[in-house]
Amino acid sequence: MTDQKKIENVIIIGGGPAGYTAALYTARANLEPLVFEGFQWGGQLQNTTDVENYPGYPEGIMGPEMMNQFRAQAERFGTRFVTDDVDRVELSDGDVQKVYLGDEEHLAKAVILAMGAEPRRLGVPGEMELGGRGVSTCGVCDGAFFKDQKVIVIGGGDSAMEDAIFISKYASELTVVNRRDEFRASKIMHGRAGDQPNIDFKTPFVAEEFVAGDDGKLGHVRLRNAETDEKEDLVADGAFIAIGHIPKSEIVADQIDTDEDGYIVAQPGSTRTNLAGVFAVGDVVDHTYRQAVTAAGTGCMGALDAEWFLRDTPPSPEAHWMRGGEPTEIAPTPSA
Ligand code: NDP
View 1 (cartoon, rainbow, N blue to C red):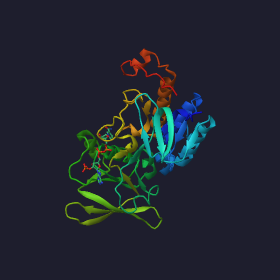
View 2 (view 1 turned 180 degrees about the horizontal axis):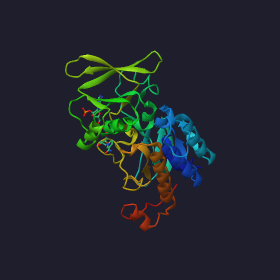
View 3 (view 1 turned 135 degrees about the vertical axis):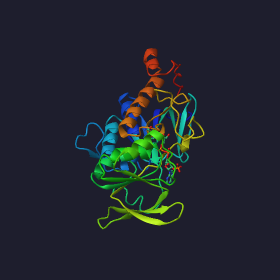
View 4 (view 1 turned 45 degrees about the vertical axis):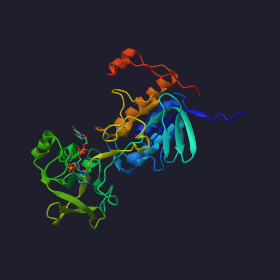
């Protein structure tokens, strides 16, 4: 008798809002998903404190607790979890997908990529240690905690401008620190930030260290003038690092279409990639929104796309067309 290896219906890689939502939906569709949630499961929310912008939690909820609940809800319908990081994958175009933990091989008819993204870091002292105690990488998430306080935003792109404009509604004083005199941000965003009466720009400076005050929270940021090397301490209750994001697409980078920044490319209005049976959801595809609620939304889309692929029951051509895509053939389910 030959040893027939089990072929899963669907493997989901990633344990953040996108991955767990994809798990919930595929589990409820009786597809018995297997989730590789990562050793540090929970995604970026695992490093967040209060989440006040996820609908349905009027009092807010702690990020890790919310991820616990996402996970428990997916588990309730039979999701299986592997709490480890995938080492490599062998993706195919419509054939069996292969996922490896070391030498251990897992096969699936469909795979949903939900590895997320991570904020680019400065890599300076205090940055990680004071995370959640004044230093943040998410203005939309944490800006409101700095009402009438002094805040620094580090970065000169559109994200930094957007964060600055948002946080300036709460902060008393806000300083945008950029390493060059020129800003990468679009003129319009830079201009809007400049129009805010409580926003100042400080250039060309780099942040060299985040230093705690007596209360253990951020007290000041040590800056260095990038031209003169002169040091300066800027008092701050909050510091937001907005210097871009890095999609966690390394394990698939040379096997699937990604853009110049490494984000996986999905078809417009869909989670399909250039490979039949491979779907991508959440921040690993998302340049722009990067919110838990949008990640969860695309996780749901990925689950439905995978289900349609596996059952060969695409939505009506009209529905597909209305989502902005050309009607396309859906690949047949590969034989197990
Ligand atoms: P960007 O790559 O556009 O900008 C990153 C900024 O961070 C640059 O000013 C860069 O400086 C600076 N930076 C990078 N590394 C460091 C470092 N180690 N130390 C100090 N500064 C550093 O990233 P964004 O996240 O701002 O934007 C990403 C994309 O998303 C862009 O296409 C942007 O237009 C888009 N976006 C659009 C928005 C909108 O339209 N509402 C809102 C937010 C983003 P330098 O210029 O010197 O490299």
